[in-house]
Length: 227
Image (cartoon, rainbow, N blue to C red):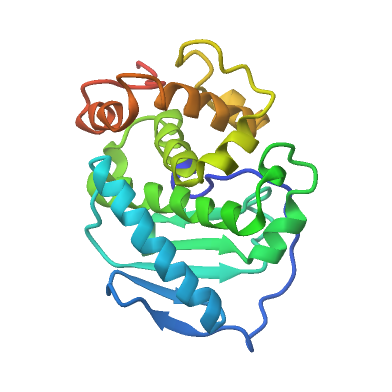
């Protein structure tokens, strides 16, 4: 299904992966292996993984199986516009190398406002959310819009308050959070607006991790299409 393959939208720059950069590094927690990164980036990624796992556990998501995080310089033509993906068949996340990600976001208004490594880290948190949702629920994890809601909520929560305020600048926030704008069409056409709308709803009083728990338990749903 599409949601298990492509989760982030951006403008893609495709170049080859240099074998000189490709190294394997197992994180100290034993729950993630980083490939394709130099030692400094691999160490940084392991720290991000630890932070993301802590955040996700607070929102009722725990890791069931080890993950591989592969740093790449581009994706194939069958995955246009991606900065990160989760491959459910192999429990593998692939993320664009930071400098390539920066080049790919020149025309993406809100995401391009963020400091590069803050953006990179938040994309890791986004894809880890998809990974843990799939590990726990498989294909029974709800609609595509629901999966993206959870991933973007965790991505936005992973940002510092300062970076999040920078991202949200100019977005109408003086209104209660609503699920009206949480749909696949908006996500595909304007992922930055989708992310902002998700954060407005997720951060509203009474939502947050409690709402995530209700989605995961099936008590509430987003975007379910009846047959």
